[in-house]
Length: 213
Image (cartoon, rainbow, N blue to C red):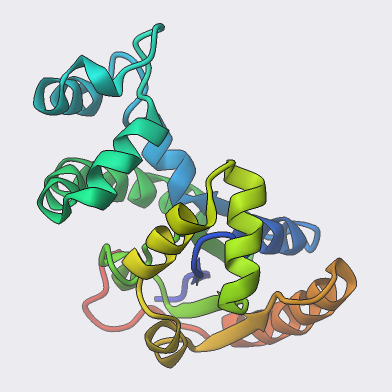
């Protein structure tokens, strides 16, 4: 049975995954961002937020009762066991909602769509996609972008980079790679080439036997 292609888009922090997704959207390609879904499942009133607050205490909530993501990040990056606990609470819920988004995109009529996720490989979300596209930038550029964007110092930015999958391993698992170390024109040209390639692949793509995703 034929169905549209699902392309998983990943990369380290500040690699420019959202910029790549917007560039594909200019070609009419729908996408869902796992980070956006991760924010949805910890919104006020969501069961995950109640579990997180019960585990870590009120210190991880702001004055409005919303999750203080920066404070929680500081805790879990310092304590691997706490990070593992948090992922056990959030990852299954994120996966469930991503599946719903993927079903809607498959019904959209587009030949392919994107699942954008910083933890595509680490979380097992790569099992939901047909191809993996890695957005790659040099580490020095990652650090510069992270400090400028997130208001953290270089030591904190480096700790985040180190905690993620090593660059070489991520590249080794990629089906396709975009070098996002240049300007927007260079990015747009790479996206245009991949868009044409994915449309060609989608024209003959069929659901693998036993695939229920």
